[in-house]
Amino acid sequence: MSAPRPCRWCRLARVGAITGDRGAWVVLAPAPAPPSPYVTLVTKSHVKVLGELPPADLAAVLAGLTLAARSLREAHGGGSVGIQAYPKRPDAEVAHLHFRVVLRPDAGPQVVRAPRRFGSVR
Image 1 (cartoon, helix red, strand yellow):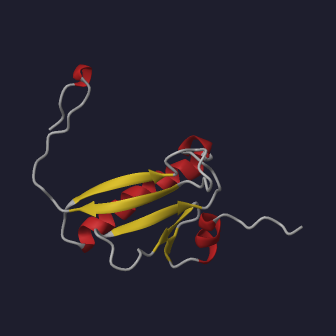
Image 2: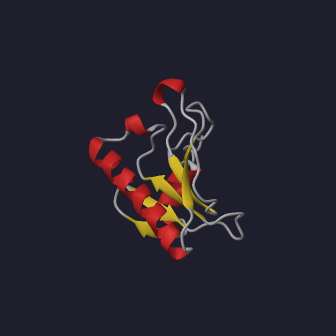
Image 3: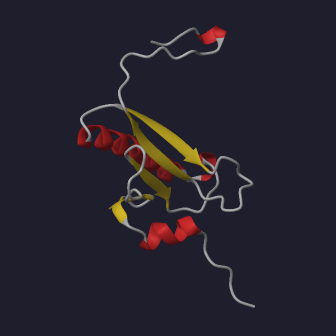
């Protein structure tokens, strides 16, 4: 019986098309011709959710997401940035925490609707 293969994200965090490596995380080069510019930030620790990261790694990942968002905006002349966390479900077949940081075209001021008790944020 052979040993199980490491998950796809663990492999990519070691030998993928890495464009940034900051200890607790790596940034992978985007796939060719995405619909919007994006980068993928992968945690080096094989965890499913943020709460499983050690505090120092959690701080480093949050700083990395901030850096990735700033870099995308600067490289493409502005816009807003969305951050999507994966896996969407902790019971996913490959549950390794990673984030897609996506640049969205700037649509001007937006109103974010919050639950009634929080009001609206402009």
